[in-house]
Length: 289
Ligand code: AMP
Image (cartoon, rainbow, N blue to C red; front, side):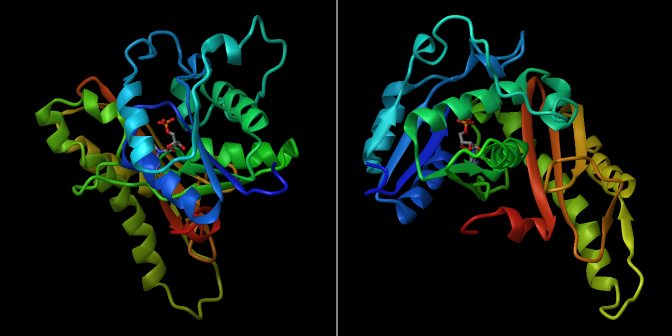
């Protein structure tokens, strides 16, 4: 079948919103068949995280998939994915101490393992992931390269609400006051991006020596904006990282460089993540932007 048809695949954990649907629309543009999956993967949740409370709304999800002409949806149960004790996992090296890995030690191994399983089961030609979870997207791109998994990974830009808040299944947890201020995260990341963009546009095109913006300056800028909002109850991380492997960087070079600026904060009790891309990272990473 794979020789005859281009299959596009969009894995999800359900509670579908337009961010998910937009990935599926992109998949429809480039593939004959689009398959989605819904599986809330327990192995990527840490103890005490919201696994039990994670929003589940299968009927509404199926309606939305139908309305959008998605060809098939794979909804495995836990035992189908993890029948008995697993001996083998995909363990990404050097990922446990970056971004999401810092607060959630099991996260990247859980993500890499479930995506590897789903790719092997569905066997798509192309698989679509959101920029919203950028470290996950970059990890999956590296995983299919490193393990020679025959699929093209496409990372598509984050879909946002009109005030800038990145769409997420977890936004439903925000109360109305928290929802109003939650755009602060995107605003803060943009302030970080602006100091890089301004430094680039102010520097002479003919400059011979490379020049830099320090990560410290970028982080301070982002943090100052976040701290201006009292409903931001904690800042879990602010990361300035390479778009190639998410390793933290000490500076942004004004010559030919790319960056991912990402952060996780709590607004009240709700954990939100977001990121922006700077310089070359935009064209290097994003598909169909
Ligand atoms: P999730 O159901 O949260 O695991 O997300 C499934 C896929 O949808 C992942 O590749 C996410 O990065 C992507 N996604 C989630 N929210 C958005 C968004 N606002 N814009 C674009 N992609 C998204």
